[in-house]
Image (tube, rainbow, N blue to C red; front, top):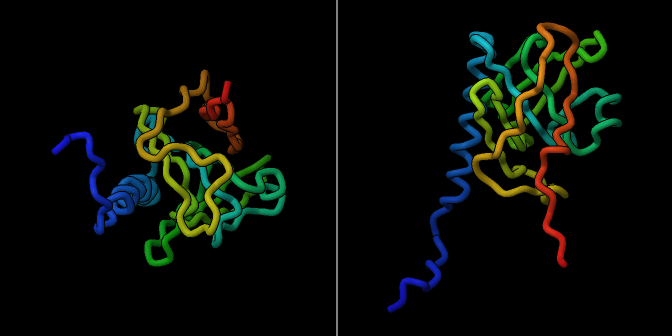
Length: 172
């Protein structure tokens, strides 16, 4: 018998359970921030699908980011609420000084990153019929490098992480 034989297909959904457990880490972090605020220098980059069912973003953001957006929870956010029954979180961010309410299902999250401690996770999108166009490997992420200098306060900014995404290998 060879050790090189492929393992049998599992009748237990281990992959799904592992993804749910990793997503729970992000949800607990958001929940902690909602209950207690962000301690010390912790702050979160949250990337999510704007086209995911149940996601609600203002029209001007949806037009600019029709598939995916990254928000930063740091200095200026209000009314962060985690609703486990509805499997989503809600937050008010300020874009150009204008408050915008965002509703994000947990299944829409594709990345969680706390640059203060260099902790990051990537997730597959849940609850969509088609995979995301830029699907990336699952599991712990290589977090983007921390921002060079972050202002102490100011309006919330949408951050594009496209420069940090791994490019697919080209056939040569």
